[in-house]
Amino acid sequence: MAVYKAPRGTHDIFGELALALEKLDVVARNAFKKRNFKEVKTPIFEDAALFTRSIGETTDIVEKEMYVFEDRKGRKLALRPEGTASLVRAYIEHNLNQTEPIGKFFYSGEMFRYERPQAGRYRQFSQMGAEYLGNPNPSADAEIILVAAEILKALNIKDIKIHLNSLGCSSCRAEFRKKLVEYFSSVKDLCQDCQRRLEKNPLRLLDCKIDAEKFQNVPTMHECLCSDCRTHFEQVQFLLKEVGCEYEINHKLVRGLDYYTRTVFEVRSSSVGSQDALCAGGRYDNLVAELGGPQVPSVGFALGCERVLMAAEKNGFFNNLNSEEKVFIAVADEELFSRAFSFAYELIENKDNIRNLCSFKDNITVEGPFGGKSLKSQFKLADRIGASKTVIFGKNEINAGKILIKDMATQEQKEISYKK
Ligand code: HAM
Image (cartoon, rainbow, N blue to C red; front, side, top):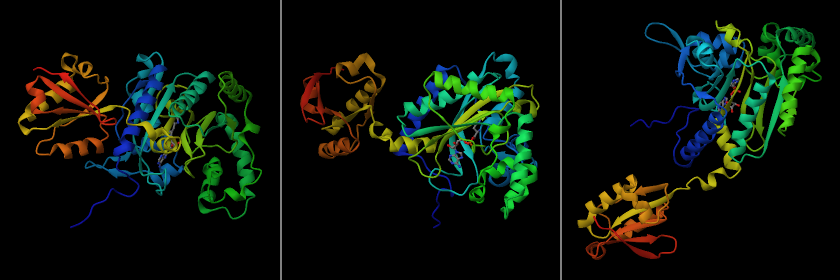
């Protein structure tokens, strides 16, 4: 018999990780909703050209990592490698600039990139992201950075650093491009990717892992920023400082997607190994227009759920995931099974405020009853699932109109009236 395994670079999510992912979802949604970001769900696959056009033909994602396939009618489709392009496509398709007075959106879901798998790098991974469309003000950049930082803080992740840079606009980028071509042309033995990208997209060379060592004293974008871009960048920094948000300027931060203009940032953690970017984003003032919409300056970010949870785990986030009280229903006598079964139902539905009657908390998890097991093995099971209370249905108690509630930690038992 063939033994099937999850495809390379994918993983099954269960147990603690599933619980942690659920908590991250709640934390991020709260942070987004508090700031009036609204959810948009887009398809998992799109026209492949949407990504080629937006992310850029000479990026790693488009050149090497996209899952591209043809459907039965020969349409060239791609599993989404990221969420921004899809969201912008939806924004244009549904004219959201006309119906939404403020273009604040968030999304969550699976992304796909054919990368070499390693800790924190997968072929299928989850992102949660926010996009702020239509606000050219530096305050939108600051708000996006702050919401990202706020989510990480709410998860108790302390060892983070915000890396910040500006990539300028198309006019100051042209100047930077010229300086880079001049600089890189003088570097000997560039790798094949760098040689190929030198003419088309010299910024990409700053990202090269193979040649990184050879690049000393590379020109920085900062030297080339025009006065508007410089002011914008200073304003973003001013606002971050105003609210006490710490960051570090990183001249080498260029990001792996071509749509960025002006502000770019990454939040990195020192506790997760080489794949240390927990979230990343930046401004993309021309993307909506480049995809056929109006000129809508925008900014956004996405966090990688798996990486964020790796960092959260290192910071103790997994220690108290099971905060609900678990209540186990046990039957001492098989005849009472149906009574116990309907009691479990009443407890789940909280009929007649029965949780209060039993002195249980509001957010309890109810498990059982199980037929055909001795009372001893039911107690064992209750222990194994971490039940804090076990409700016991015994003949004598039921005949006296009562049930027993056992505290699993202290082993104390108390009787309460239960008449049905
Ligand atoms: P990105 O930097 O490609 O940006 O991805 C954002 C985050 O997704 C990364 O910081 C990382 O945590 C996670 N991530 C990326 N690739 C993988 C992978 N192979 N395995 C696990 N996690 C991964 C974007 O996707 C942009 N759309 C962000 C953005 C939104 N910019 C503006 N708006």
